[in-house]
Each structure stands twice: as C-alpha cells, then as structure tokens.
Image (cartoon, rainbow over all chains, first blue to last red; front, side, top):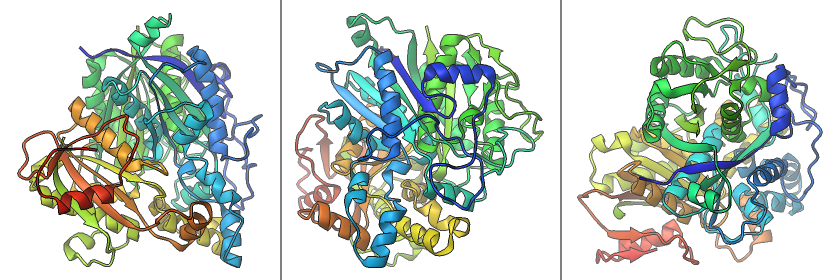
Length: 388
Length: 215
C-alpha cells in the first residue's frame, strides 16, 4: 500500500488576506476587497483583487516571486520546517506571469533603440518560480519544476508533487502556485471579452465574467513517515489527483466537460472514495459564462444535486497560476475549521446549471474535499484533500 | 520506459498539409511542436485507440516569447483596449500543448513545464513517474524552442556562450508492448549532467543498435 502523503504546512496571500488567519477572517465576514488597478497604469476600468499592504522585498525578481516567498514563509513555519537539511526536497510551483518576458518598458526601449538595459531581462531570468525558490531556500535539488498549465498550473504543480513523493523521488515537496496582477494578461483577458466590469458573480445566472486577482498559495507535502519521525502528527492528506485534456479548443472548455469529468473520476478513484464521501467541492468557478456552465453541469452530474460547493474567486479574483495553490490551501483550511464560506457573489440559480453553490457560511460534515481547476488549452485538474 | 517513436523538427518551413491545415493560424513555436509530436506518434505505430489516455508533456525554456513580443507591440501601438485576443491566447505557454492535444485527439494528462536549464530532463522525470504510477501507458514527451531576435539580443548579453537555436523534438515513451523500440531509457533522478531533447533524439536516430541507455 502506498505511503500516505501528508499536508503539513499551509501558506497563502491574496486580496482576502496576507496569511491564512486573515483569509479565514475575510471568509467568515464575507468581505470582498476589490478595487481599481493601482499596480500599473492602464486605460481599462475593471475591478481587480490586488494584495494590499504588501511591498516587494526583493526588487531583483518579479512581484510574483515576492508573493510566493511570503506564502512560502508561512507554509514552512506552519510545518516547522525551517531547517530542510537532511531531506530530499522537491520544488514544484505553477505560474503564468513569471514564465513570460512581458516587460513593456524593456521592450519599448529595445523596439525604439535596438538595445535596452539588460537588468530588466535579468529580472525575468531570475524569476523562474521553482528555481527562484530553490535559490531562496539555498537547497540543492534536481526536482525543481515550474508548471505552466495556464489557470490549472497551481493544481497541477501540487499533483506533480504527489507523484514525486509516491515515486520516492523526494521526502518533502513544496508545491503550489503564484501570480501577480500584471498589465499584459490583464489586457489579454479583457481582449477575450471574459472580464466583468463589476464584481464577479460565480455560478450566478447574471454572471458577466471574471475579475483578475493575484496571490500565492503554498502547501508542504510530506511523506507521513517523515512527518511522524520529526514529531509531527499530520491531520491533512493529499489523497488523489486527476488530470485530463479536453483536446477540444484553445480557450473554451469542452461543452460537455468531458475532460473535467474524467479528471474528477481519476482523482476520486486514486483517493479510494466515492462521491458520497465528499464534504464539499471548491470549484474553479471563474464567473465566465462558459466555465461556470460546464463546471456546474459536470459537478451536478458527478456529485448529484445536493452537493455543497463554492467558488472562492469572489474573494480573491481569478489569480491564474496561483488559483490552484490558493484553493488547495483554502480547501485544507475548511476541512480543519469544519466550515466553508458563502460562495461570494452568488444570488440567483442558473437553470442551465441546475445547482447552486452555498449562499452562507456553511458547516461541513465529512473528511474529504475536492478542488478543481480548468484552464486555457483544455486542461482539467482535480485534487482530493482529506482530514483524519 | 521504452522509446518507441521519435519526431524531430528543425525546419519550420516544412509544408505538411494534413497536419498544418488545422494549425494555419498558429505561430511557429506551435507548428514545430505539433509536427514533432505528430511525427513521434506516427513513428511509434500506435493506433488511435491509444490516444484516449495518451499523456503529453512539453518542456520549454522560453516558450512563445516571439508571440509575447508581438502582443506587446499591440499594447504599445494600439493601447490596452485594442489588442488581439488571438495573439494573447497564443502567448500562453501551454498553447502548443493545446494544439497538440486537439489536433491529435489526446484526452490523457497534459503538462507544460518550463525551466531555463534542464527542462527536458524534468519532463522525462515526470514521464517516468506517470508511467510508474500507471497514470498512462504511453506518453508524448518533448521540448520546443523558437528563435527570436529579441531573445537573441538578451541571451547574447547575459549568456553569450549559449548556442541559441530553435526546433522541437518529441518522443513516444511507453511501458507496454510497442511495435517499435529504439531503446529502453532510465532517467536517473540524481544525475548531474543534463542532455537536451535534440541531443537524445539525434543520438537515438543515428544509433539503431537498440541498446538500453541511461539518461
């Protein structure tokens, strides 16, 4: 029987809190912290979920990295793993923004003059997310992977960490995702016509698109035997991971959600649980017409109409590569706390979906949670997180 | 795991009408990756029934930077509100995998990963772990890079020793019985030296002795 993979540390930073404690306060109060863009100049007027009261400590790397370092510090502290020496550590993190050289100032200068100071380009080259965390922690490892599966990157990074541990490549894997709010993807998402000019309404009949956000969510994955050996008694476990491609379209999900359904079934099968054992689903729930319709219909089909589910993007905005990391952290916190927050923004059921997310802070019973991610390119991913 | 199919694209001007009709709007990075993946799948001799749970792993250092710069051109020339959604969607790193999966009809797990060094090695490690877990029986694993003058300028300044080229190499790796077998491959997690997808493909295509190899 394969060894249990424990989750021994959680760290998060997003518009709903600069750590997990602040996040739970926001979830409990239902407070939404969106506002106009302040991080860069833009002519576009759309609400965004920026992280507040946060300053980039290291300007030699991108803001995405600074967000990741903040969540990393909390997760490592939560796991009491300040000293990683003696362990085989892997770093597996997802992002979108930190993988692209989308520095407008650098490129503008280069385009006009045929040359530009390379410091900004070096900043990009210093910002491969997983490699930067390896450097930050001053560890040596061959298991250093930056996942760029668009909006499912964080979920897939955690799933890949699970594979590394099951294959005995590592004792401990630091996994999750991070992304900053950046002008280039902001313009890009607006051009796609999927951004709302008001606060997003995930799964609501009147939803009109997503709000972008930023943040980082990090989990410490650890073989249970390693955690026990260092005196920890884990209560949270990563039990299953499913990943399946739609093979359908570059930006739209398969209309019947075939890839998502497959990913969910794989994750549940790996976890060895049936749908009745799932206490809640933390859905991708971006509030776009297409995503929520497909996802909602699949959730109803797989779990039935009485499923408790929510989208936390009403609190964080869509944080792209960070979303899967953040939502895994939120799911784990909810299992530990015994409640999930109201699915912020939802009011009216969409008859085309046929089920509704929770509308108030809701007590949960059961020990298994599912977190889903859907992405550009037709990626569909699901994690099963459990509490003993 | 066994390597049962290889596809290498170094000439992006190749006109392959059957494959290219579905990728005519794609950028050169995507075209190279699709053609290499297609060739590797065909070379393996697997039939279409294998596609339902065929894995797909793509490694890249810099991804679609040429398209990203074209998207920046749009922001600079036309402003935030007037940029091309097509350029944006093609500037995302996993756009190439999306084209491969939709053109080949792949419905298994797909992953795009990036690292400025040894990304292909990481991809092989992932492939080996997926095969070990039984996540899939066959995986297309490959790498792709595109040449661009902006990246040439940057790399010539920060890493002049780098021999910066473009192309794509894909391999069909399997655990089950295969019609063809170039070699068995064992990816050693703690080996210090890394090889690129191109060098592995080149050495395998030149040496058909079918000897096992460690990488």
